[in-house]
Amino acid sequence: MIAGEKAAVDSKQKIRTRYKGVDPSELEVIPAIATDEIALEERKLKVAAYVRVSTENDEQTSSYELQVNDFTDRINANPNWEFAGIYSDVDTPYGQNPKSP
Image (tube, rainbow, N blue to C red; front, side, top):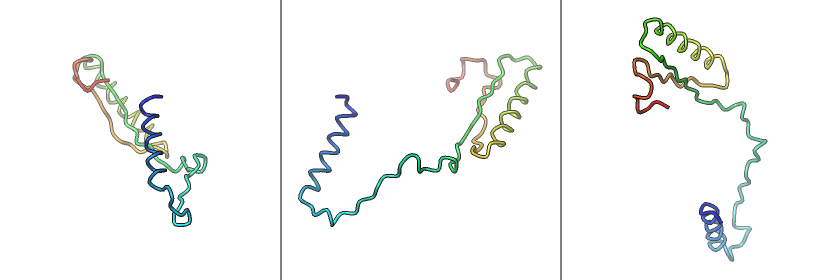
């Protein structure tokens, strides 16, 4: 048995022990919501974009701006997405930014 499974079994056993002998009519049972009943289309995902420029050439500046504009427009056009921002490594050579993926 995996550690996570053992913890889940132990937790369930503690609950059973705690309520052993309790009159079921005194308990309020709250049923779980089935996955197919959850309205996923009503939930908005927070979406961010990662853009970067691989060189320091002046020609790449417009590439950066085009990437930002394109991703911003795409994210804002989707009604199920909430724009969370732009993450970028502009002016940072690839591999030198500790936050870079």
